[in-house]
Each structure stands twice: as C-alpha cells, then as structure tokens.
Length: 112
Picture 1 (cartoon, helix red, strand yellow):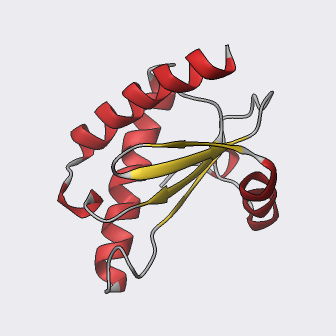
Picture 2: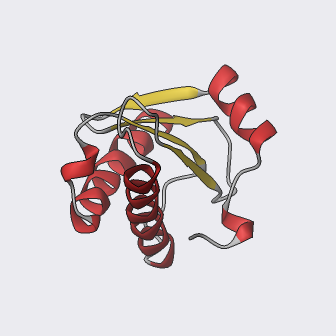
C-alpha cells in the first residue's frame, strides 16, 4: 500500500477522470492533469477485469508495489489514476513496473 500522502481521494479521482488527459497501454489506462506535480495515485480494478474481490485486491497490491518502487527510484510519473484492463492479472509486479517505465516516456514526451 502506498503512504497516505501518495494516494488520491475520491473527489480528486473524479476530477482527474473528467477533465484530464489519458494514455492507453495494453493493460491499463492512465489519467492525469497537465501541471500536476503531486506524486499521488489511485488504482481501480473493475469487476469486468476480475470477478472476485480477492483477485481485484491482489492486482491492486501488485500495482501499488510497482508504483512505490518507481516513486523511490525517482522515475515516477506525475500523479494520476490508473484503470486496469483485462489481462493485467497475468502480469507480475516487475512486468507492471516495466509498463510504468514505458508509460513515463510517453507521458514526458507528450506533456514535455
């Protein structure tokens, strides 16, 4: 789990999704706002992705661990919301971290 300072509240999540930019990868969609410099994140896992709560929570934990590692490495992308897609349940934490690194390159290139 991420520390509270690195987690988004529900109202922030709704605001980012409604008015933010988005980036797609094969396993998740990332929503962010331009000029956002707070490294706070939220991860959502739909019942369409994983039917059981146990599997949804496992996916969320793996994702948060990958995010925590990227925050510590100072390679973190700016804060935002991650909405997972089907297929992410097959990835390990290291594979998720690799997807995040690839995404950070796309985000930096587009937001400059």
